[in-house]
Length: 399
Image 1 (cartoon, rainbow, N blue to C red):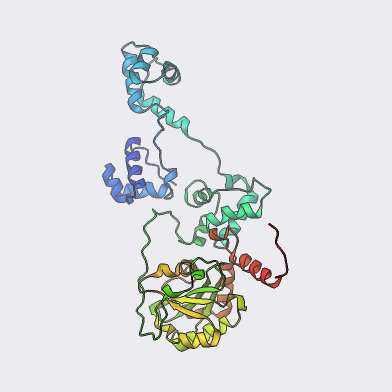
Image 2 (image 1 turned 120 degrees about the horizontal axis):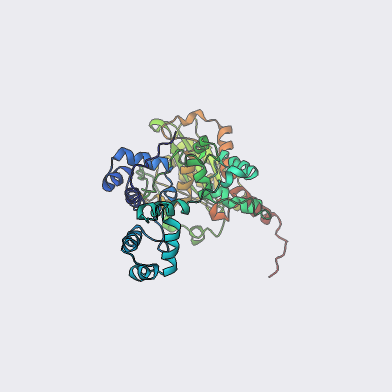
């Protein structure tokens, strides 16, 4: 049963949520508002961590509690709606309606009772869209099971159902259906499919760049600043970013390759370790499967697993560039992809337990996710279209 803290005055709850909206954590916000930190945590969880579900202050077009206090005092003193309106700066008709709505059976107007009735009328107990539309709910659940984010699902609905406006739902509605107690439109366990895996939304924090790894004495490195301009603006396909994700105690690893223009992902199976020779063999075999169109360059960090980069270049023709130390943003697409991969390969686990077939399956699932930067198409769709255009060079275009 959900515990509702109705004993807390509304003004106190509003102060608490104002602190939350300003970025304060639940416990300090509760202390600042004047109640127990544990109560603040319960209030935050009751709202599902979704600030839009918290009590909101009424807008300026509505009467405030202070104005209602003035109306009560002036009414008790015998003043009429016109005089009261002039005193509080409101039209006489507003005051008249307020008195008609909120004067009790005894003929007395009380500010606190009027405020409570106004807040109750302002509520919108509309049933959740996902709770009433079975077809839409089924599609959303299927997307969550594929580990798509609510934003990806929302945007992809527009592409997949262009002529069905009823098949639209905002990503915020999906989040609320997952997190907010009592809405119950989606199964709560589906939150495990989200990237965070949390059953509670948390305030957004500033991302901290991952610390880079030392170079390990790599010889003849070519710096990322020397890459051709076409690599930086992603205008030409065939330029890749790569890295390793590491398992428990850094004893196992999986190699990741991401094509910059299409965000297409390939994963390197490294069951025998992550030394330079092993990585070079796995990478050469993987790159050999690519068509010439996709053999441009590779950008990696200064990890010692790339000590044999010259041999990789000789065997594949792929030019290799190295990022500056502690500069993960120079491989932004790869960093983002590695974050997505942690849904499948959590930190602190043994990555050697995943065989090559499992890596192929995970890569296919990632390549089947719609991406905002691709206009909500998937990397697989964009790459397929790119290869098709290359195979049909005689097709003319018209202005």
